[in-house]
Image 1 (cartoon, each protein chain N blue to C red):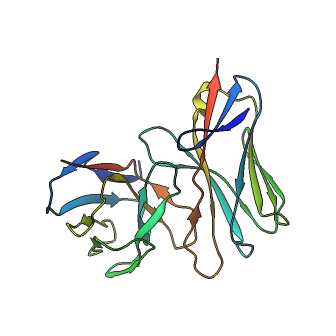
Image 2 (cartoon, chains in turn brown, blue):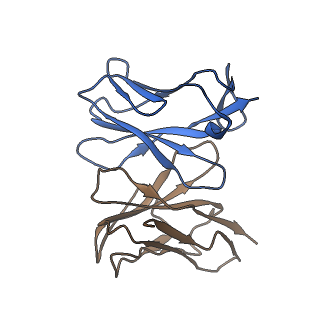
Length: 112
Length: 112
């Protein structure tokens, strides 16, 4: 079955530590996205990528970094510069930007 | 009825009744809208979409209504079932930016 796989499902970060969230898709989609979901708020866009080796900042990119070396993969690194990283992180993909997005089942990041 | 919960508005309905979930969108130029369903601990799932040249679109047990005059979108679910319990949110697609803007959502609780 085609879909998006996010791992791990739960992740804990220590102070000063960088952590990387994995996102893999086998839908052959060009566009991929990372969102942050906090209670009572809509999804907020962190980064997006329209094509391999290209990515753009979203609305809340500070403290995060991404790479897009392969079409299938779009990992997100939460750096120590992100002072409030506790959230539910969702990865999504779509054939092209502006089309309906397919979502993974998320990674919940907490601080130790 | 509908009430404001701690984080999200909540709509409680009896099993078998119809549900109406509302969404106010922000950009009068948005030309494409999607409704998503998100179950606890999972990623959002596409339910139905509508373009701005339409007022109404029907799917299986779901209907989306678009009122561009007041920038309002609604999702109607017929014969609500326990499996419909989830958070529902709308997304709008501004024509130039093409990054979707997501609403905070409404929690639907189906009572036996």
